[in-house]
Image 1 (cartoon, one colour):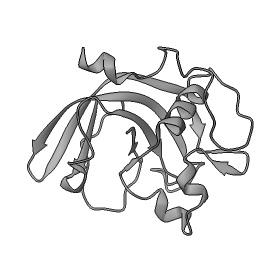
Image 2 (tube, one colour; image 1 turned 45 degrees about the horizontal axis):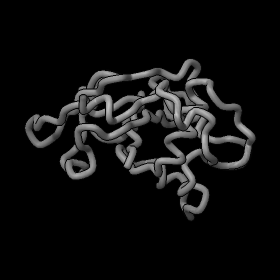
Image 3 (cartoon, one colour; image 1 turned 120 degrees about the vertical axis):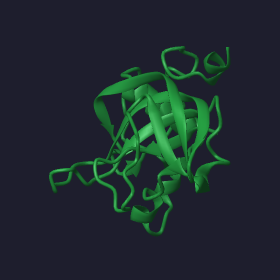
Image 4 (cartoon, one colour; image 1 turned 180 degrees about the horizontal axis):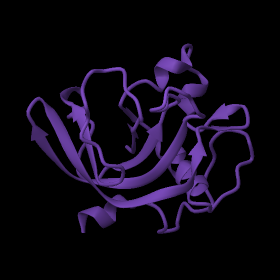
Length: 161
């Protein structure tokens, strides 16, 4: 199942993560069973910005986990096939979130808080299609992307080859 990796400019923990967008992602051990080589990922950036301001949360790009290595009490994974979204994709389309589970969450802010979360394949495909410019948003939730059979977005089979 695809994953969302949170890549914030500012985090509330006191740990300085050794993340490099599209190259490496460091995560606490609580996510070690979720993050496996070959997993499709989409990067998400929350509202807080380094200068103290805020901006619309957005998705930054897609890739594939290629390797996971322990680093002390944390894990670091390498990312391949990274494709940035230019510009970043806002996390909502119309009145709905692009992650369908957020639309039914009682506390939406808590839904987006984890550093790593699972994402269903249809939502991942839609985010890829919108972020890479292969589908126009209709403003109403998540559907089947026009690019579902297109190789232009991260394909886990290619990471395993």
